[in-house]
Length: 249
Image (tube, rainbow, N blue to C red; front, side, top):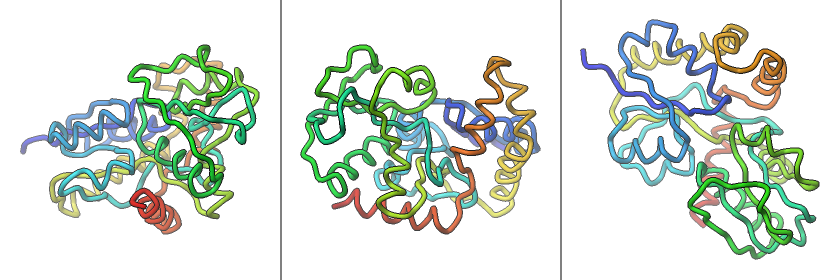
């Protein structure tokens, strides 16, 4: 049997997924690799991978893409690693630097500014990694992923985008979901999801097996249990539907 190519996110939030896929029976029939969310979306679109943990904002742009039910990268309130940061109050922000690693978070920020904060913003695409030290005083920046842990204390104003979404909609948020460009039989889906579940059920082992420094491991466990929600439940499906609807307006 030809192995299926699977792309997971190279951030800490997908650590339990990666551990589960590497340490259960599904590992025998997949080839696993890790990338940033935006690269995974491109790989799926270009048919360089069969299954990917993709930013949900990319779903409408990928032909014949089917969401695999069960698991996701989401947040029920504060995500912590998806921030809008600035040195001024949000009402004074004129420009926002988007994060090149993200698609969903950039779209989410645009939705919040348009529909909820009701501000006209100039959006800056840097085409390079953001250096938080060089963000101008009238400008905010979107930061996602592990780099937030290093930058979060440098700014007096921080807005957790998942928290802001929750405050305005009453719903959780889904940042990324598993999707396939090929039909999958139920036996494969069950085996795949059992691998994901194993990783979540063995979070301590996943963290211990990682390269995370020992002193940071309690913080990472707290982040993965309190900030990130990996179950793709009906409330998250409702949130995803609303997000995609607002993206199309």
